[in-house]
Image (cartoon, rainbow, N blue to C red):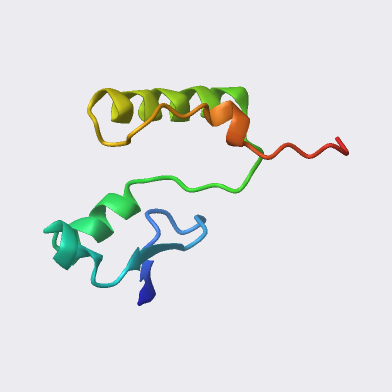
Length: 87
Protein backbone atom coordinates (compact mmCIF):
# COMPACT_ATOMS: atom_id res chain seq x y z
CA UNK A 1 0.00 0.00 0.00
CA UNK A 2 1.36 3.42 -0.89
CA UNK A 3 0.62 6.66 0.84
CA UNK A 4 1.61 10.28 0.56
CA UNK A 5 1.73 12.33 3.70
CA UNK A 6 1.78 16.13 3.30
CA UNK A 7 4.73 17.83 4.94
CA UNK A 8 4.78 21.39 6.20
CA UNK A 9 6.79 23.76 4.03
CA UNK A 10 9.70 25.36 5.79
CA UNK A 11 8.98 28.76 4.18
CA UNK A 12 5.64 30.27 3.13
CA UNK A 13 6.70 30.59 -0.53
CA UNK A 14 7.83 26.96 -0.91
CA UNK A 15 5.74 24.47 -2.77
CA UNK A 16 4.25 21.99 -0.29
CA UNK A 17 6.19 18.73 -0.23
CA UNK A 18 4.80 15.26 0.18
CA UNK A 19 6.52 12.29 1.71
CA UNK A 20 5.54 9.31 -0.38
CA UNK A 21 6.36 6.04 1.25
CA UNK A 22 5.38 2.44 0.93
CA UNK A 23 3.23 1.83 3.99
CA UNK A 24 4.35 -1.31 5.71
CA UNK A 25 7.89 -1.13 4.37
CA UNK A 26 9.13 -0.12 7.81
CA UNK A 27 8.02 -3.44 9.22
CA UNK A 28 10.19 -5.37 6.80
CA UNK A 29 13.20 -3.10 7.15
CA UNK A 30 12.91 -2.50 10.86
CA UNK A 31 12.90 1.26 10.23
CA UNK A 32 9.98 2.97 11.99
CA UNK A 33 7.56 4.89 9.78
CA UNK A 34 8.28 8.23 11.46
CA UNK A 35 12.00 7.83 10.72
CA UNK A 36 11.23 7.02 7.06
CA UNK A 37 9.16 10.21 6.84
CA UNK A 38 12.01 12.30 8.30
CA UNK A 39 14.49 10.78 5.83
CA UNK A 40 12.14 11.43 2.88
CA UNK A 41 11.57 15.02 4.00
CA UNK A 42 15.33 15.63 4.04
CA UNK A 43 15.71 14.36 0.49
CA UNK A 44 15.26 16.29 -2.73
CA UNK A 45 13.25 14.80 -5.54
CA UNK A 46 13.19 16.40 -8.97
CA UNK A 47 11.92 15.60 -12.40
CA UNK A 48 14.43 16.21 -15.13
CA UNK A 49 16.90 14.75 -17.55
CA UNK A 50 19.43 12.16 -16.45
CA UNK A 51 22.76 13.94 -16.62
CA UNK A 52 26.25 12.46 -16.87
CA UNK A 53 26.79 13.48 -13.23
CA UNK A 54 23.72 11.53 -12.13
CA UNK A 55 24.88 8.50 -14.12
CA UNK A 56 28.32 8.69 -12.47
CA UNK A 57 26.77 8.85 -8.99
CA UNK A 58 24.50 5.91 -9.73
CA UNK A 59 27.43 3.96 -11.16
CA UNK A 60 29.40 4.52 -7.96
CA UNK A 61 26.50 3.20 -5.90
CA UNK A 62 26.11 0.07 -8.05
CA UNK A 63 29.88 -0.54 -7.96
CA UNK A 64 29.80 -0.39 -4.16
CA UNK A 65 26.81 -2.73 -4.01
CA UNK A 66 28.70 -5.22 -6.20
CA UNK A 67 31.85 -4.99 -4.06
CA UNK A 68 29.76 -5.63 -0.94
CA UNK A 69 28.09 -8.65 -2.54
CA UNK A 70 24.64 -7.07 -2.49
CA UNK A 71 24.14 -7.62 -6.23
CA UNK A 72 25.41 -10.67 -8.13
CA UNK A 73 27.04 -8.92 -11.10
CA UNK A 74 28.37 -5.55 -12.12
CA UNK A 75 25.96 -3.18 -13.84
CA UNK A 76 26.83 -0.56 -16.46
CA UNK A 77 24.34 2.16 -15.56
CA UNK A 78 25.07 4.15 -18.73
CA UNK A 79 23.85 1.19 -20.82
CA UNK A 80 20.53 1.18 -18.97
CA UNK A 81 19.68 4.88 -19.25
CA UNK A 82 17.05 5.68 -21.85
CA UNK A 83 18.13 8.46 -24.18
CA UNK A 84 15.64 10.41 -26.27
CA UNK A 85 16.84 10.06 -29.86
CA UNK A 86 14.88 13.15 -30.93
CA UNK A 87 17.00 15.66 -29.00
